[in-house]
Image (cartoon, rainbow, N blue to C red; front, side, top):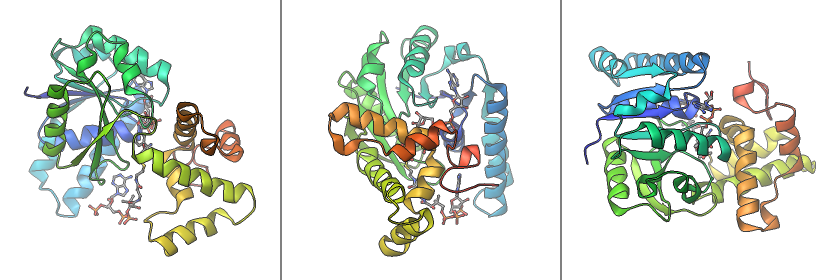
Length: 283
Ligand code: CAA
Ligand code: NAD
């Protein structure tokens, strides 16, 4: 099937990045958010990043203008009525995602593929709330989306081979690398990454070392581009906690228990870079 018109739901850090890479790859994209303010912020961020790409000589001014013209913003989910593909990137909460998928199932054409960028929630369960479960799939981009090459393409138990193939082809068209993964808690990426981040939080909680020193060990000792606590702040501590809860519940194994300090930070509203404070303070 040919994918021409795309909608991205949620204009936060992931949704805005996803919309940008689709527009840069020549597709027409509608970016949706329920909040006008979030939509304006998402579109402004894309404009800024495209302008910087021109400054750095990675894109011509003409290409920048064309990419931006392929993008539009809307707070109306019904505008997905002419879309071939919708990618959902709203908050990591099953109730919210199920509501969005039920509505998308009503408003999109019968042939449309519905993808989710969830970090950890069961795609099989999301697919089951629609009348087209074979056309539901996980398309898990990494943060920051314009920079990171990987897309985990996650098959729900109901996903058809046609849907999988269309999304694998689309991922390559975006100049990203697809990796096929089955639908189990945390998929591959977060099943491995999040326990490391959670353990880093435990080392701070237990007074083994400061956040700066934990990050230095992993940066200088293991050549990670960012220390785990800087990365946790960058991902969002609320998202990290949701993922640990999904792993804990999904596997029923105490090794995935979220660190109490992570819970406390989230309760305090210290969500990392996006809220101005997490393990570090941001201006
Ligand atoms: N958005 C878009 N582009 C960004 C960006 C952002 N937030 N941050 C940096 N960049 C771009 C810069 O513009 C620069 O682009 P050019 O090469 O075109 O100039 C490039 O990234 C490198 O940036 P910098 O030189 O400023 O910084 P850096 O070398 O330290 O790299 C980084 C920044 C790429 C973010 C790097 O620190 C890194 O790879 N960090 C780890 C990221 C990571 O692990 N991501 C996965 C998170 S887990 C996940 O996403 C899954 C989940 O479900 C939670
Ligand atoms: P975010 O908080 O930056 O953005 C979420 C956006 O969704 C907000 O702008 C919010 O207004 C909007 N929204 C909420 N409910 C909505 C609805 N019903 N309809 C339309 N818009 C709605 O979150 P994020 O970090 O961009 O994460 C989004 C999704 O991507 C989550 O499922 C998360 O787990 C996943 N993810 C996050 C990362 C990461 O590093 N942050 C990486 C990969 C995947």
